[in-house]
Length: 279
Image (cartoon, rainbow, N blue to C red; front, side, top):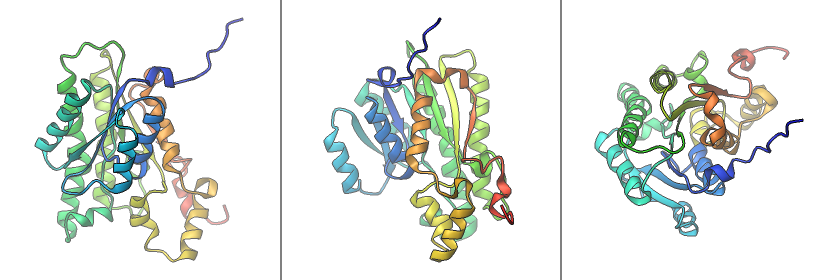
């Protein structure tokens, strides 16, 4: 009888270098912590023009041999190239790209007051920024000798990446659909290469971005009703998405090359659950 190997991704990730955009909060922060816990060295970005918050600075100080931080503006091709090159200079290579940074329908208000300019910023950051991060990463890796597959893990959303929802902001959903399409297109182009490409499409996740776009406009009773209407009657935790990301970063994920993964706990296959009566 054949023996089954115990699935242990840590040996394959120890010493690998990951570049995580938007590593200060939510899913990005959970990904950074999960990768560090699995032995990776991680270069993560924070918004250019903002100070590195104290909790993040303390975390870096606790793991100086595993972490570096890089300012990034996804609206600037020069900034994208600079941050990735800084990571290459610091660590010598990048094995895993986690293309996570984005803005939502509420957090984009930090970039503009009027809706039209906000929509343009959503596309510039979520879609064009994600595209340029991938293009810059691939250009840097073009002449690298690859001993093991590189990984590109894009973060999209169940809204746009998998399903459509009435009332969802058009620019937000369209930008996430663009990330899902980019993932499939890159995967098609890189099928015979040593670069694996995936996308994760989270559902309602317990992050500051989701709270700002959805929960903060509700009173306590409305919030409870909303959460109870979600699959499993709860929000997804960022650490749950980070666990999926860690698996995709590992050597076990290659058969999933090109997958756009619905990580919505069932919302993607049953979007009407939010409005069903008597469920």
